[in-house]
Image (cartoon, rainbow, N blue to C red; front, side):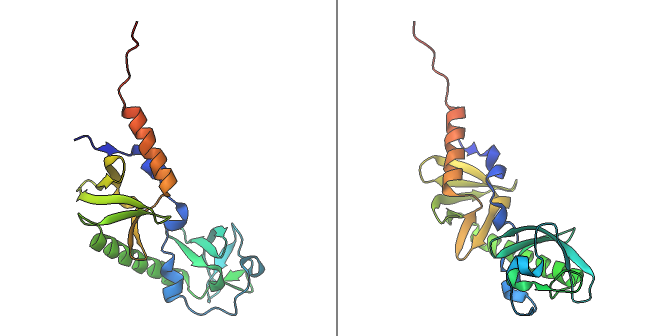
Length: 196
């Protein structure tokens, strides 16, 4: 049996799904009444301050109603409604240590949820909720063997899997994953000799 490893799988990851997006919804301290991200000074590159007036992190990007904040050691996606306008600039209800602790706690929950769902026989989906196939093996090297719905057995990196809702999810769209599978299949196909 030939199992294809998608070496280019790292390029498929959706950056918007990498941070614990549920963080702010589950644990955010109340902010002052919500305003659009730009109205509170939340723009890419802006420094975010805590309730003590000290810097918490920097805005990496604003994605619709979500804001990606980097504390220097951790990154999280938070709803724009978590921020308010402060004397120094955009403010959040956490100081840096509390935000980093909340991010770490959410990451631990996400790892535990993934380990519970990532078992042989589990169905794997893409971020756009399309079935990829069934997990057949979780290898100790961090790769997961999946019986792809059309391509047969493939290997995908565990680090690019998460739980979204109730679904075990690979962090790529169906179109991107299928393109990578097709590309790997084409590269692996033996060349045919020309007949003279």
